[in-house]
Image (cartoon, one colour):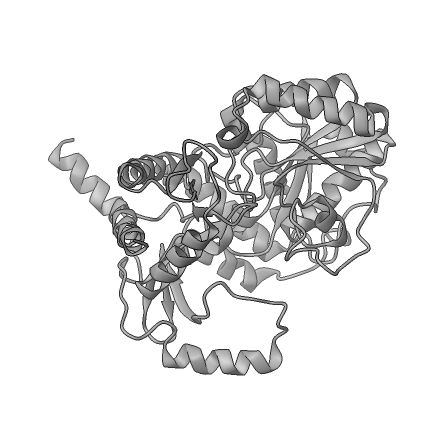
Length: 458
């Protein structure tokens, strides 16, 4: 790279209002956070828990600043929401500008351009070259609900199939679609019916090829449900809460082929894995999979509430006029922010940034894996990477889950200014879900803290 190119790159680098560095100045949580937590306990439902009871005052780039002045490296990004970075400049400017013009009218009464533009961008960037249409809603769970509703309307069938280890939300229908009952559904029944759980692809534990895993899934669908009664199969291309399971090659296209042959709508739940997070606009692209419907949420609007169902026009048009929509779905401010997110992905080449993050993380984690035998597996794509922890000495045999180590590492990291997230059906997965603004320096700093935490386990 020439001096001119280096100077141009430095000039184009983002300017952050918060120094992009870790800093711990009090105990965690600090006194102000403890005071706020006491106030919270009196007025906020105990059912609304927090992974780390520090109260955030500011956030920028990949750093969270709490009320006590502690700065945390954020490897969670609001569980994949602030993909372009906290308070990203284009998003803030677009949302602020829209607030000056129109905050709300309700698209189903008096529409506006921003909704249309988001639908155009989704049609352009979701997998598949066919004509596509969208409906905009508020949250990931609402997108799942609407995707299922649309598939049922199009097919005239009722059955909904999901995969083991899946997570789809906390509404009545999506609770029934989740693999784990606790904490998402325990005691909240009765749950929605006509939902069936089929085997998934979990290469680290099942050892199956993609085609063999798909054959197992298809056998279940045919025997337990029957294609004639199945409206849709809903699949996360990379399972999120389940532990960032990456399916074996061939698994998803084989399932799509079966769905197409049998008139079943196959839906990609890209709520966590979409919007450039994995180095592609949508994770489905990594697997040569072109689903019938795609669900977007989380990172689509840079932190504002927005979600979408996008898919084949003939499927999306099956609903009668007035059958889709909602009071706040496709809010103008959230839509303006979403347009800015698409612009940021292109302007800042965030797909390449996701690939950079993957390379830095996996290289560092591989070094740790050579030293700590409790790291059983490293997996993921882009800025969606995880390690699965097992009991010492079991990684090549029983692969016995080690949830205790994950809990200890999350707690250790928090005390040292790093926010990690746990995941996995067995609670033994440590997931790294940073924004695409995270630098290699921050990743390496976070990995040093992880190294210290692993050493402290003994």
